[in-house]
Length: 267
Image (cartoon, rainbow, N blue to C red; front, side, top):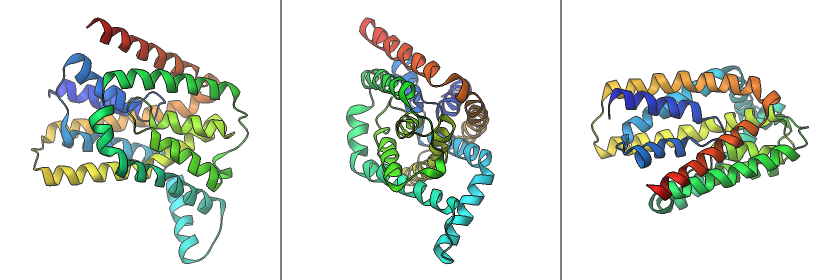
């Protein structure tokens, strides 16, 4: 891997991690379409660190408030809308953990292909369009119940299938349940914190036990580039989502999906 490839892959990760267009699809595609080598475990850890830092720093006030309320609910028995939201985020994380443990090997063996990415990109793009057009848009994230949180959590679990998009699946589920676009995005982004931490920790453990060599330059490139790209992406997405809705992302997904099918068919 060259520095240019490292920069572009980290840029792709940062820009697509929080947009409903699938970061995993965009990271798999360079190897499938351009013949790039796999970026390796160390680089995967690096971009996870970068995107995690971006979302935590962007939502730092909310994260501190939710953590304080969460521990206050445990040790002091205090109840608040912040503690409730914190528990709902924890609950929403559980399905992905279970699904990941049970299905990780199957996904790695059979579903990380360009054809699967093309199909899921189109299918879930159309689902996002339908749900967004018919959403009631009346609830904020603090109105999440345990049933709604589990439903969004199951959507997050299904997003482990490449091309689905974690943020796309969770935002689609939240819109279906009546969340506003901004609330759906915020809940999705806050949900990403524990799941990115778990994924990064798992990859980090694999890296330590694998003995894979670490290139510090590529690592720093991945962390810094993915951080700034993800931070900017979160900021702009939250600013513009109420005005532009999900249609631009649906169009992009359809173009990407059908373009990939055409490439695979004629290559």
